[in-house]
Length: 319
Image (cartoon, rainbow, N blue to C red; front, side, top):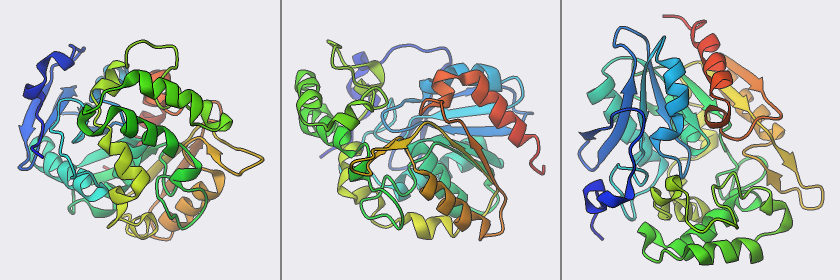
């Protein structure tokens, strides 16, 4: 199947608070926005699954006072190229290696939410030497987004069924587009505990139209995670043993269903402790901040706390 560019469906998009740019990275064109002066330290903001760069725009307004901030659309999301059959952590990560090299051009702090946090972890392990100063993992599903994790719950014990429903009823590249089917399936096919995660997945049963961020998302992403294809060559345990920079980890609202052990939230306490052990085993600093009442996206729901938390940590990093 041919790749899809934003030019193929121009009516899909809306304007936002910062200008958007496209850079040709070879296989894909990556869409991004930038704010702040080039004399300031650089930040790279990596959205979560089904989020476009503009999910960060309120946080960008705060961070741009002290940083030059780059927020991107990953392949398969937003205005960046959609690549059927080509979604994996290694591809996402190498896109950003090229982006840092060709656009940012200097060491950067990589900050990612959710699946973007896993990609920030990938960069902290596998980016080219000298590209990364540090990495911020914002409530990332490390291990919980794998089908066979080294520790704790898998994606099938978390949000996986929501991704499965999106893919089933919307189809890869929105080839089906049955949003009413999505709503009906969310009411019939999810276990009760998972109903409480629907808002985190971006879908409301009472909405008549899909939200903008979901319209800009290729549902094949979700199938890549549920099937395990996304990480077939990228084991989280092995990846975290290769981390080479300081890490900030923020852990948000989560709980385990007492009957099944399934996880409501991105990552369990047990898994966070294991992440910490692996990264500290590399000799790099690991800073954990817990926000038990915080929504999954801190930068989206509380941009002031997000900017303050990130800035406080970055100012303590060596230049």
